Each structure stands twice: as structure tokens, then as C-alpha cells.
Length: 414
Image 1 (cartoon, helix red, strand yellow):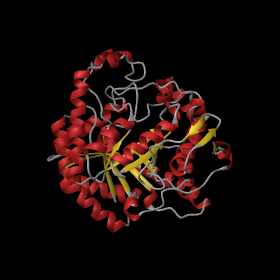
Image 2 (cartoon, helix red, strand yellow):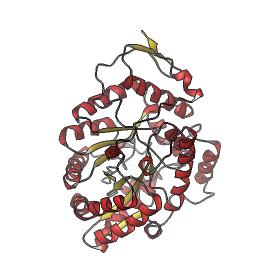
Image 3 (cartoon, rainbow, N blue to C red):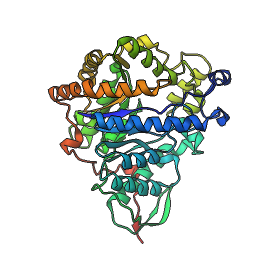
């Protein structure tokens, strides 16, 4: 198995009463409540946690990117990736992922990814995402063109990695007189690309058609099998049989010496689900044009109070359904066996802490996980045939370009 550590890098040191009074803590929640002294402390603590994660045996460290919200202190994924490239020696740096359509220069991503890959000596997994709905607002990106821009930016990114320049690019959304970056990735043909998501059938099918592993982000176990069915059908249509190596799963997992302490810390996973102060607004989560009309209607009803809040399941219910796993090492190992037998992912991302979990508790969680949980997971992975796709040296991608993307592949020599 491939085992990676993750945290959203939350910043809970702000006045909760102000967030509750506003009714939201993202996008328009004023940054006057941000404390850079506390921010600096949290960054240093996270760095120590990441270094410990590598030390105790994690295969990778996952980083992501969000904006205008205290639930995530990573507003630029390439910055943390660069830091990790310099201060770690063995662990893969897992970007989940670069939000291609929210920025105006895919070429800049290509250059930054190449630099990180070289500095890390080929340890980068350069995952890509469309960017959440809120990110379109925060970065002033038109959500109606999100998927079109994602497709075109991806094609340009891969062409830049794999073909010699100079060439020009005249696409629908991006135009370059010259594409000829001097910095190029160490890995050939390019760093692995993994694609995270939740319930988007379009993204699942897109990832499968390109043979990119799909990382399911904490979806309920009883629904995750449906996601793999969508992926598997799309994979077979383009000529290959998918397996566990094409599947990843992110899960909230907290380990402590006692069950009582583990549950106390794990309750903080509810923080960004809106039960404390991690509150968003449905119109920002799914702005017009970002998703399908059906999904837009869902969020419209949600905003008007016509249906329960998404993620309204209680802490106890999420423990029972294994959407949150918490306990002593033995308890966590037993729960994770259920997860692995049900979802069968070869890539497992353990989301270690959230909310107000303190640095000592976060460090102890990582330490216990490395000492007892990770070795047990590797044994289970071997038993269940869940093998690390990187160790297997599975194909990086599938050369496939749907007809509607051909227009985005019109790069010509200068």
C-alpha cells in the first residue's frame, strides 16, 4: 500500500463568536481576525509534524490548497511542496492538487512543478483539481468555464512536460506565443498525476480515461463502491482493466494512547463541517455554472433551509459509519480493516487532525500511527492485494484525447 499523511492545516485561533455571528467563516469572513503571530506558530508546528510523518514511515505527505478560510492555511500548494522538497529526504510530496483552471497560467504551474520535482529528486506526485466552488470566487475565476479550462490546462501541462519546445499554443482559454520553459521535471515522461474528488461522475470518468488514480475524499463507505463502478466502466471503454492501484481514499483517522483521548481529539473533525465554526455558504460552494443544474438545485434548496445541511451526520454517526476512525492503535487497525476490505484502495491518505487539536496531540497521533498502525496496514495491503502503484511502476497516464479536447491540442512549432 501507499500510505500518506494529511492535514488541512486549520487555523482555529480566531474569535469563534465572530464567525458564528456572521454565519460563515469563508470567502467574505474578514481577514482582520487573522493573527499572523499565531499563523507563524502554526506553520512551524505543521512543519515539525510533516517531518515526523516522514520519520515514522509514511510514504508520502499530502498537501492541498484553499483560499479565504481559516480551515486551511495552505493558499498556494506549490509553496508547501517546495518547502517539503527541501526538508524531507524520502517521502513523496503528494499535491492534491494543483487547481489548474483557477489561475491564468498553466505554464507557471509547469515551471513550478518541474522545480519541485528536481529539488526533491523525483519525489513529486503532481495531482490536479478543478478547484472547489468557493475557490472560483476567491480567485476571480469564472465558474462557468471551470471544466473547459481544466481540460485545456491539463493538455497544455502534459504537452509542456513531454514535448520539446519551443512551440506555440492557441487554445480557447490559453494562448502562448512561446512555450519553452527551461526548467523541466526530473521524472519522465512526467510526475505522476492523481486526481482527487468527491461525487463528480464527470471527473471520475475523466480520470479513468487518462488512467489517473482517483482519490476519493472521505466519501461514505456505502457509496464509494458506486464511484469505483463509474471509474471502472470508463476505464474499460478505453481498453484497460482497472484495479486497486487506480483507487485512493482519504479518511479522517486519529490515534491516541487511550480511547477517551482519541475521541476528544477526533471530535475536532467536526470543526470544518459546520458544527463549530467551519461554516460556508451554499451559493459559494456551488456557484452558478460550476456544476450540473441538478447539483445547483441541491445547493439552492440547502441555502433556503429546505433540506438538512450536508455533512449533518453527528460525530457518533460518522464513527459508526467509519467516516471518522478514532481510538487506540488496536481499535484503529480493526476499523481500518473494514475500510480496506470495503473500498479496496491501494492509496490510503490518513487525515490526522483538524480544528483545535494541539501540536503535542498531533505529534503523538503521528508517532503512534507510525509505530503500530502503518505496519499493520502494510500487512493488510499485502494480504488483500492492495499494492503501491508507485512500487508497481504502473503507467503514469494513458494517451487519450477525447474529440471535444482536440481543439485544445493545437500547439505548433514556433
